[in-house]
Image (cartoon, rainbow, N blue to C red; front, side, top):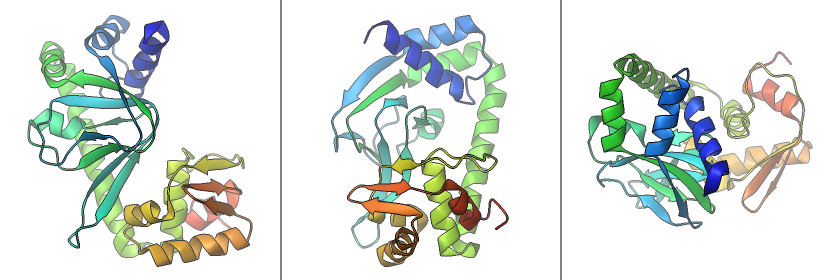
Length: 235
């Protein structure tokens, strides 16, 4: 992958709470342990129940984390975008994977094997605190997701998730146009909403000129108004 791949891998590791703030030589060591794997669109990366042997980071493309519904369908739990890491929880406890990971698009992934990662943690005891902070953050996010499903109105949840997938934060003030590569059905699965409810909300916003929904994408045309719908701004 050449020098540019190494730079991308380094930057990706520095974004993650596990590694942010580590000395440069230690980051370089992790980059040396890692490798890059490529996956075609729709190609499985790992399956639920499989051994947790590696941590992954997205250098290019998008990855879907999913599981099976009681009816035999597929439920999307999360979409992993460039710069994000996945598969780290099972990597830590050594238990089987709790979900499927599939390349939604052609992907380039950073891969760090469990053996090298755990050796690195043992050699750097300060990492234990980072791991605890990351696990607590994951628990808080899961708790918030459950609370959103129970208590947040559907239109606010749709707006919040679209802004999150677009990489927009609550404190920003830009009003740019951003396209999110996701189907309306996948968005509904991630929110715990029916496809009909999700489609109805998007149709209303499309009519109002706030979004443009197409096959496999949703373009956000007014970030500011969607922030208001998400409850991030006062109307």
